[in-house]
Image (tube, rainbow, N blue to C red; front, top):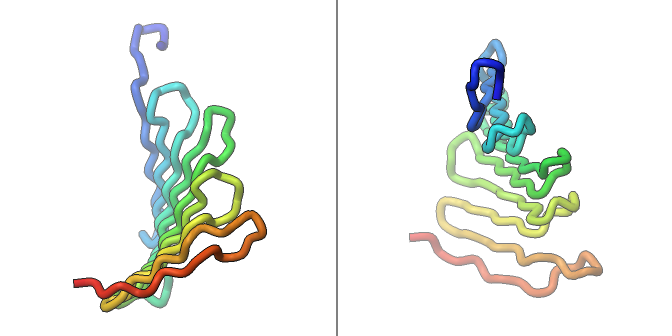
Length: 122
């Protein structure tokens, strides 16, 4: 609360590069003055896009992260997720116009535990 009695409930800051190809959104979801989520969106020269979303705890540590890359033609995308903020991607998903492949979480030895067959997307 400021001197005028105004209470900040949430705040989103939008930053865009001069050429419009890079956008950064920073969000304080509860008004405590700490950024809770950052979303970076980049359109690459080849037309592909990358979206990087990071969630933070009150002390600024990353609690989760998802990086999604989409091809210029929109026919394929890859999403990688760090579900617990340890810097290791726990899940990767690849989408194409005809199939989806889910790569399962890794075991403690960092090896894949099992595999999932591609599924046809209808």
